[in-house]
Length: 112
Length: 112
Image (cartoon, rainbow over all chains, first blue to last red; front, side, top):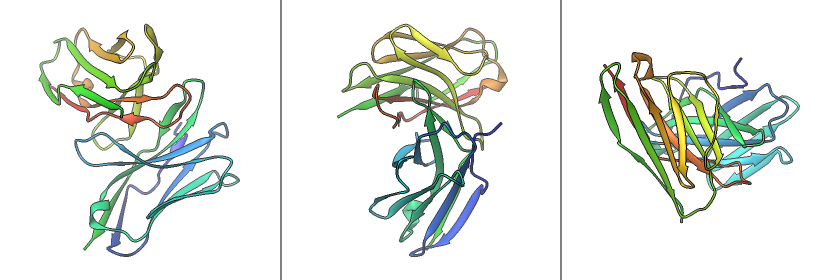
């Protein structure tokens, strides 16, 4: 049973436009959510996070939105740049060791 | 600042051979440590996590084991590799009271 789902395996966006990556979760015990960016053959890089007590967190071009009632979060990238092309993973945290449960990832391609 | 190292970067091993992957963290004390595997085209699967020296929790029963002989050292091992052990192995750390995990560069393991 996938507790964190990224239903879009890929997304293509024109440079300068907005990229919206989506993530859904089923476990209501999750209380912290993170987005990671991953290039091929490299480890994931932490991008941005949000606590369940908030519904929005912004850091430069990246904004994460959390809708707890819908168990849905999204990452907005504005404006999108070719260097943003990578696989984006959402992750959710719960448990005593603060384990992360990852989605399957979305490949974002920003076209010049 | 904190740094996480993994080695080797790539490894090609025959079926039935042993495995030892090493991960070390610098610049922090008493971190939580994690081993993940990313199979081709898949998300990140948590294999083991550790909240302290000698304390290992296994998430997925399999052909692998983990050990934490020192505070900032985490080792992934196998006595006999299987073809299905091929994948991209990632080590990560987090502070004891924080959710954000920081990943190493990864090891690409190919079992032939």
